[in-house]
Length: 414
Image (cartoon, rainbow, N blue to C red):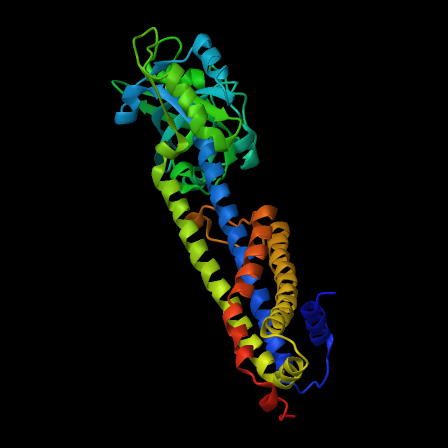
């Protein structure tokens, strides 16, 4: 049997005199490790949940890759590009592509008897993936949008509905100002709410056919095509496929195709999300320091209290290395109990939040109404292993205090 492990186990399980100083020190060290790990687990789960929730919302409005007229990327004017059946087939056949959908953007004004609001109308067709909008629908229903006729139905955000005091089923006039003023009367089919203010405050959904007609475009012309990829981790590889086979080619109206990823379309959002990683590393470092310092102080107290035992072991022939390993094993037992406590506490908070949403946020500021938490088991296991190894590593130097304890002097103390 491993002698240091055996002795450490006996010391750890020995309750002995309740008045011993080491007992409170062990409890403090255990709590230090446990609270530190719990904070790390909650932090990582919150940041992952927040990053992925915001990312999915931005993708819900803009997909993974957008194919447009090359002029549209350098101007605020509306430049159409032809995305007919043949181009749709080309895009769908690209490696890594999961789904392709057309869209058209036009500008207009929604007006009630008391107020008006400038908005963007996003025209979509029957192939448009409504999964994201269905998840955030709060009132009414999503209409069957068409690319061949106008249903005169729109889907608006709750933010727009509140500003104009509208509800599902209401009718409203929309004005489109170009060379002439054109008026359309729409029925509000449904209301969505994503809490992404930059989209919710101005974006409505209508028929692809209506948006293209209002822009005065030719047959097949749209603002562009949105591409959803099979694997988000392979986004750049799929983008490379689009660049190689679509970009710089021209349509039948001699417009040039170009593309951009969701990162390029909304760089400020993703840069902000990446900055959150810095906060995570700072918190992880602080919590590891807390765990390490509590373990160092606890180990020193235990060594000083066990001075007589160390002297006896040395008198019996035990080497400094053996005794150091004994106390490192003892520390490993404390850390292990702290890790167990930390996992229970941390995962308990995460599971409770996911089940109840008890911790809320200001949706206008943080884009979410509840703190999102995402459980990543491999990452949590990595946190446990890293905390264990780092905590034991920082104890190696303090354990050398044992070599300065002399048997003859130590055994005099009771």
